[in-house]
Length: 151
Image 1 (tube, one colour):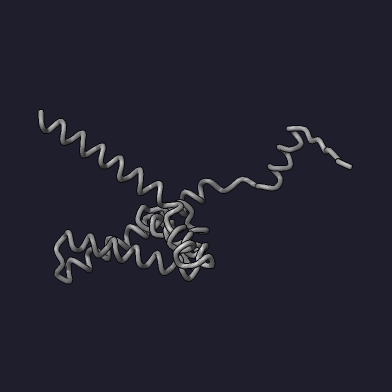
Image 2: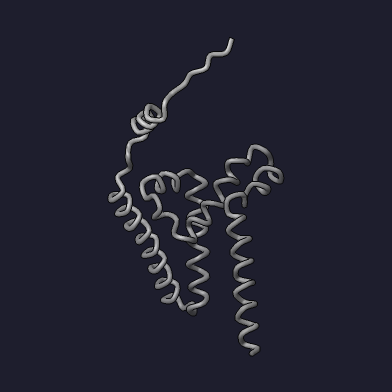
């Protein structure tokens, strides 16, 4: 015996509004600004530290990027980055930390399926499209510049 229940659009809308309260948009923006700015400030402090240690500008930039990726990967691995992201919201999407988190998270989630078919295969499920379209658009951009410099 099949029971079919019908609900009106208005009733459904009321139920969803009740189940999912509005998010505090202004507070979320403030948190994202503070946390995102804090990550950028930390990156700048690392850059200053690396240049004061004698690294040239290019090496210091590489060091900052690598350090931020490693710290984010470790914090994601131990479950701390997700707690920070819950508070910071979009502030943790500062490109390099967001990218590192998007690579490590699926790898951890699928590690029970094995090293090759789990961790390695799923590592780039989120970040993969970003990499593909980033490389494709940079190639197209380089090609356009190359063509216009020829003429």
